[in-house]
Length: 507
Image (cartoon, rainbow, N blue to C red; front, side):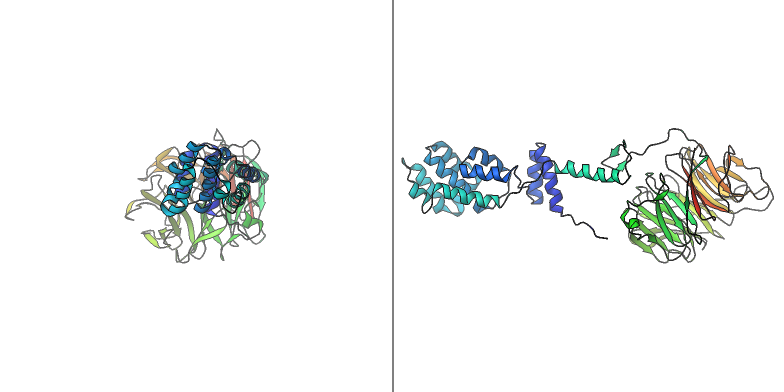
C-alpha cells in the first residue's frame, strides 16, 4: 500500500499562512523564527515582479517584511531603494533607510566601503546616475533584483488549512463515514455519534453477516467511540464492519486491499483501547497482538503471553497495559511499550474466562471455571476477595462465564455463571438482585452484556435465546450462540454463534 509522505515544513507553512491571513502577527513571527521555516508567499508573483520593475517600493516593502530572504538579495534591494530615494531628492527617507534598518546596519558592519559609498552619495547636493548605477542603469538593476526575488517566493491558494480540512471531510462523507447532516468534532477527529436517548431493548433483526462455512465468529466488539464493529473468527481473521450497512468497512485501505488483520490460529477474544485507536486480540495458543485499527498495522506481538489459549483481553484506562486471562488458570498484565509481563494473578484452580478493571483501575475482577469470582489489587496482585455466585437450582456449582461493570453503580458488578440466573453483586460477593429464566435444565446462560445506561441485561442461553430482565425472549441463532456485544451508545446488539453468522439487532 503506497503511503503519502508529508513534509513537516509544509505543515508548518500551512499554519503560518493561517496565522498571516488571520492577522496573528506575533504568532506568525514566533513560529517562523522557532521552526526556522518561512512562508515566503505572495498573492501574485507577476504583480510582485511588476512592482519591483516599476519601483513601487511602498507596495514592495510591506511584502518583503513578511518574507525570509537571503541577506545579499535584501542588501541589493535596500541599496536600490536608497539610490532611487536620493535621485528623487527624498533625502529624509533615504537617511531613515540607511540608518534605521537592520539590513543597512549589517551592511555597515560587514561591508563598510559599500555602506560609506551610499552615505557619500546621500550627502551630495546633486545626483549622477552614471556614478550611482556604475556599469548599469536603474531599469536594469530593478530587473535583476526582481528576477532574484521572484526565485525566492511562491504563490499558494488562500486558506489552505480550511480547504484541506474541507476536502478531508468531503472524502469521509463520500466514503459513507459521515452521513449527510452529521456534526463533526474536528478536534477529536470523530463524527458526533448519534446517541439514543432511551435504553430500549432490540427486537428486530437488522442485518445478518455470514462467515465462511468452516468459520464462525469467536468474539465481537464495538469500539468505545461507536465507529467500528470488529469480529474475530475461528479461521484467524479479524474484520472491521460497518454496522449500519452490515458490510465490511472498505474505507479502511487495508481491508479494501484484502490485507486483513490476522492470526495463524483461532482468535478467541478482542478488545479496544479507550480512545478506539488500538485493538488487542488473543488466540488459541496464547499469543496476543495489538493493532492500529485505522491502518491495520500490528504494533506489538506478545508471542508467549500465556501458555494456553487467551480467553479475554482488556486495555487499562490509559492504554499502556493489557490485562489478559487464559485457559492456563492465570490473569496477567502486560506492558504495551515493553511487551513484558508486568504482573501475574495466580489463585484460580481452573480456566480464567474473563477479567475486567474496576472503573478507577485500582482492582481487577476475574471470572473462572473453578466457579469463583476473585477481586485483586491491581498494583500488588494480592487477592482481596473470593466468592461464589449462587449455585444452579439443580445443585452443584457452576462455572463463571463473565463479569461486567454495572453502569448504574461503581460498587456493583454483573455476574454471569452457567446457570439460568444472572446476578448483580457487590465486590464482597453479596447478591443485590437476581434475574432468572426459570429453567431448571437446558437454559443455562453462556454469555451476557449490559446496555450502556444499565437499564437492560442481555443474556444468551444454551437454548439460543436471549433475555432482558425476562422482559422479552428472542430466538436469535439456529445453532449454539457463542456471545454478544452492545453498542456503546445506541440500542444495537450484535450476536454471534456456531451457525457461522453474526446478527445485528435493533428495537
